[in-house]
Length: 133
Length: 397
Image 1 (cartoon, chains in turn blue, brown):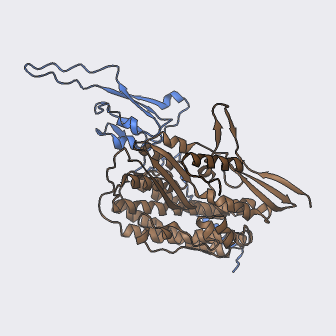
Image 2: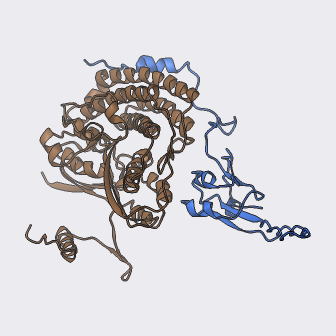
Image 3: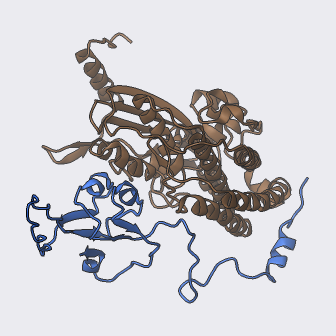
């Protein structure tokens, strides 16, 4: 059965409704608790196993030795010298990252921290290469 | 009347995707159409050979934005088949849930696009606003709106809590209400009827002959659905109907998709209410034994086929993707013949094309540094020679 202008009533009703969109740059965007954002790095936990580098589908992570290494602990008499914990840096290329969080889920020491940071746009490309120390 | 050939595309012939249709026109009527692909080749299959199985998950997900879950689920079924992994029941149920949520969002998107092509922008606005509800469900459960990345080898990455379940059910109830309204609009509104009835005819036998899949085939009366024909995940435990329609035109495709939405809501409720308890993932080693696997999956657009060959390392030897649009494109050329030029965008949009998924093959000679197009005869010769080297002779066929 044909009814012309069947949607007319619905369209008129919508004139008196609130907008379905949110005015994002002017009001805060609502982020779901599960949302996958930027990955942060905790240098004190990293053991340099390179697991995150191996699973990253976008080749966005580099883990390398820090320029400054912590001093070796003072040797205790009669005991073998304790191994020195090396310090690692993380270079995260935000322009390559696809924000899948596979690295953070693979990390055995939870050195990669999941954040919900999403406002990462930048006019300078160099700023997208974050060096976490 | 003299014939004239005009190109439709590659700039946005129907959807915002590049493909080219050469239409032979007699006046305003189309008397012949050829489809040209290859504007969007991204070399994904080759790239997949250089990545590990877990990295490929995120690559394969990007074959298509709208059916991202379909492609990964199909790929991961192959991986798990070769690895002989026992995926937990709860993980399979969550995958099926995502599959259905994805179907809902894809069909609502299509309904909006089709309404837009008809010049019925009011409906386009309402369907896309309602689609936000299901996208919010997906974001809440997985973390992202489009690339959910819920699959991992051996299971899924995130569990579903009781609050999430209640929230999804609430939103699905709202969508059910709205879909009832769209069924009414779709079958009664004279704008839609005038634009879709008897447009883009694809009779039953032609649909079979040209290998149409998904809603395009079902609208021609072909009851073909992988979920029923060869149930995967947990579809054999769910109660649903295969929707078919016998008008064989764009109107039939619209009705099939809208009624499939209703079936999907039914399935989502069944899955959520009977979610099995247990772990959500098992550990699978990084290296897979050598082997081959082929699997198919009912994506929102039709049957999606993946082939995977493993060679004993942590990287695949070959990944082959046959996206549903590839199967449906043959029918588009038929559907446009005899129709009007003004209907061409709607007919193309009616198969819900996704050209980025489809573009796979290009021949590039690195020595000469140029691309070549092979004709049918040359391809046939190459194929016969290739199999001859492997000891199979096809030359007499």
